[in-house]
Length: 118
View 1 (spheres, rainbow, N blue to C red):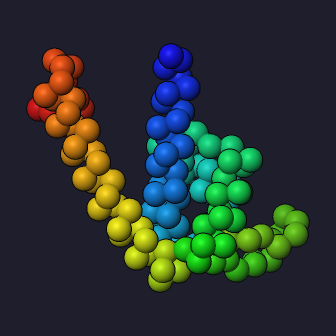
View 2: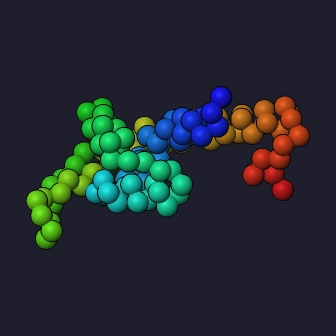
């Protein structure tokens, strides 16, 4: 199995959670979301982000507003909806439980120390 592919698949699995968490802070322009993800080693390209943003908007979790730009056409800024915030809270709890379960499994299953251990 290709390690890089496995790591990429894990990152893809948590993108929805990370994007909602970023947008929960304030309205974001897609290229700013990409920069935040890259800063946290969650590399994403526009071709991955835009369809995900569209799906989250169609699901009622995000909305957007158009803002004029000095450098060209108006820009679409995304914001989280109340439904999106509730979904984010539930997804965050689920993520925390999953991380705890995986961490316990790793601790019990082998001698490799996880980053959460002292």
